[in-house]
Length: 221
Image (cartoon, rainbow, N blue to C red; front, side, top):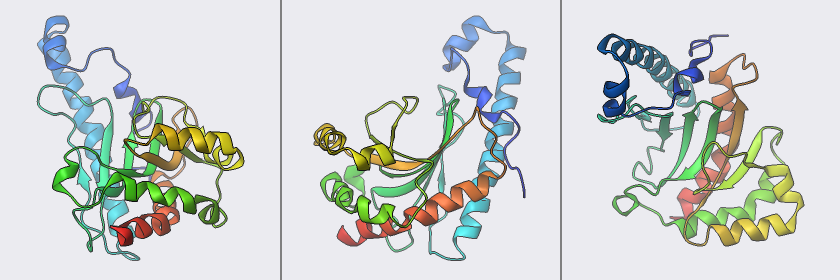
């Protein structure tokens, strides 16, 4: 068992100010440099975790090297760290598997990437068709940590438990209506208030469980 992320890594996102402009107005140069060092340290551990996941995942599936978003966009510190995984057979797919760490949770999920989607392959309507297959797929996995939510819902919101969604037709209707012009996301969530013994295993389990859904989407594009 290997821990990649520092203990309480999520706490670097617990701040009011993320823009360098704001930081320069309210912090000394020394304090800003310390914040940068903290971010870089956690981000480097995050990167090593993603590459370890990629290496082990590649033993069973053919994936491109993950897109690991930087710890800054040049003007702001990130309020989360994010990585996306795409299959070698469809490296330009809008659908992807992703991992996100914010101040509240570690998310391992299936998503449709809307940003610059016109430059990639696949439309949201086709992606959303996999909703009809969730009931059957759900019989093959342990749903304890699974949630489902509309793409536009803030990542810090309390998302809907997948078991509640599957058991309530009204919730299914409401989700379908809310994503008519967008998409949904589904995945496993670990809350940072709890203890996660092995983050790599948690991510890999989620990816492997969601692979059938991901592959069905890719085949439809």
